[in-house]
Length: 396
Figure 1: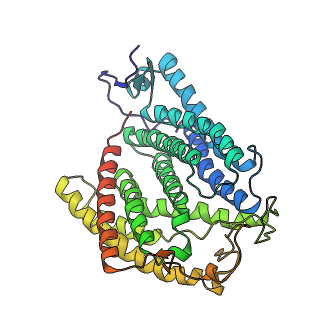
Figure 2 (figure 1 turned 135 degrees about the horizontal axis):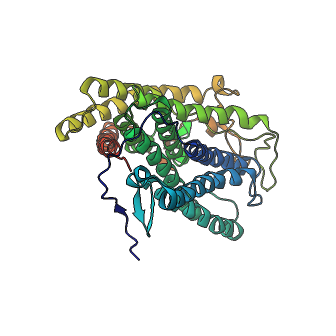
Figure 3 (figure 1 turned 60 degrees about the vertical axis):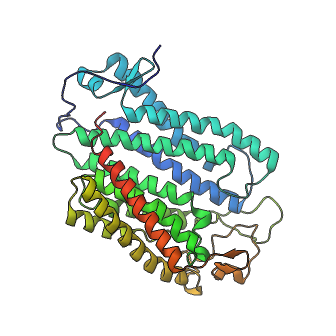
């Protein structure tokens, strides 16, 4: 049996009539996708507050529900499209192992399987080595791969509906950019250990930020049909993270594993989100100025402008905002301040200091550091524009 993905050769136009309502499964898939970062943030808080607990914690269940729900939905979609799909639905699908379904459905199914397979691996890892000392342990790396695949698959399903509609409705446009914001949040979560406020005067923080975030923002603004896509995606990232910062501490909890150096009595919140909305607004304005029509020369020029704008605005904004976050003025429920440190951390002055000049982390910001960050930002933006141009043509 041929296991390659094939595209239907049917000549029907891949266009949908806007008279039909957005399919119900779209909302189910988007709900599942947003469960993934919520569960991940909850799980980090659980480890920081309580420690290693049973595998069946509410946080773990929420995370894996985020893979299982879209995976099962896409499995049903593949079954329906192959056996009961209309000619139009089959024309808007690709073949895999003899079945037909939208491209995003296959990506989501693969991601869901990867997430579920990582579960026993993660449980064994904890039983063998105890509490995680870092977010990206080997089982978490496998889990992260599946999580990103699920979210990207959901993104592609929303994207195909947006691109096939004659008269694109608000639902298609918003759901696509909402999932783009979820992906941006997921990328930020896995950079958590390199993005603490204490590290936001370091060279590595700006290098990692420039190689990561312009790609997501540029891809969103190129593929979306909304007027301010990068800004909305950044606002969604910020809104979900702020909700977790404000909601988690409302629940009392205590550590269960020794040693306990910081006796917390409530769920530990994440640190305050990065102010990505500032460079995101500049990215949207630049795209409005130069236009969204792709072209090698135009995109190369646009990538340079996006890279420069991102680094300049992000550097100035985050540099001074980090100083505020480490000050006593930010030590409250709204900004989280120093309240995100786990029970295993010994309180001290180091929580309110920048770390880039410490002997064990000598990574100051210099002109060569910023030059490298700028180059990485330009490359990241150029890749994002190219990926966004491809996404704007996805109809299956």
